[in-house]
Image (cartoon, rainbow, N blue to C red; front, side):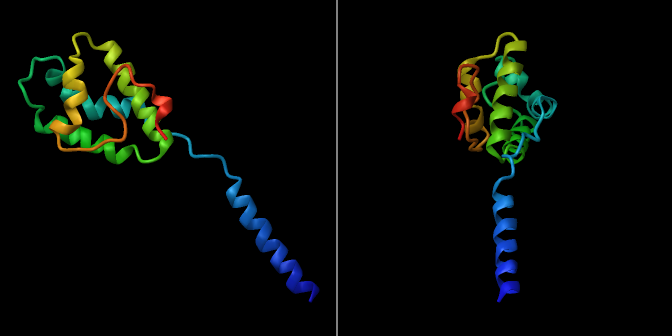
Length: 120
């Protein structure tokens, strides 16, 4: 009976430790985001026509698929904002409509004014 109790205690201990693991840190980098969205710059600055090019939409899809965890989504959001601050002439309407124009749903708006900490 003592052995059975010890085994159960060990199983409970191992299960408890698994739940104490720190939340995941972001895997996505700003370099990834910049690379994914580079083809979108002409569209976002009004120099590429009314619709984003296919390479841009492929990058938006890649960004969506890369930013899976909350930490990744928050990091990607901050990287988008950092990139937007470095590129002059970004049209806010073009930026906010980019996912819809590419037929992609991402869990945060493409906006330099959005509070990325609100992504849950």
